[in-house]
Image 1 (cartoon, one colour):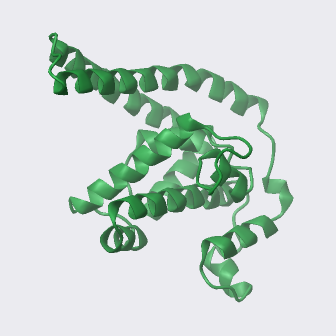
Image 2 (tube, one colour):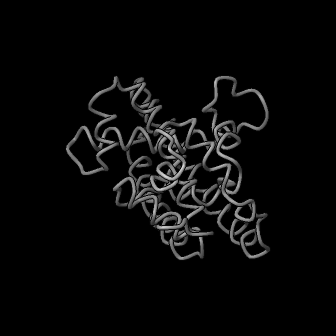
Length: 217
């Protein structure tokens, strides 16, 4: 992306990056193959189970916090163990798939994160062949998120990833220089929103690199 900005004499900004991404040959905006559709169908069952455990665990924790602890702590412990096992399996499978594995690894390298089930799910389930503006609308990252398609489920995943990234940097864990700058210079709410945008853009760029490598890397 940096090379494209230099070649077109454009400054770094979300708007300019969107313009540059739109100029890339339309052949990278391809429909899903039969193999990819089959992969998504198989993974959906696993992801559904993981998402249910996350919701149930959150509900039980709230009940315990509110004083309704009907021996829920053991259930929460078991859910956390199952959730960890499922998250590891989701990441393992996503990294093993053509294109998706490369997109996930490239995104992790760019952001300098080690492992994230939320990022793996976004890699698999976002239609990354869409234009960037369409993806922003899908994730509720545009001013009027009620226009067009909007996925609350995928929005929850990008929020979870951004919040975890923010908290990890605050704890001193490694991340890219740009991520660290955002975390250290903005209030939490603004920082996490910027991290959501950065994550989406990084996924999109990683996808384009995987499908048709950009000239000069």
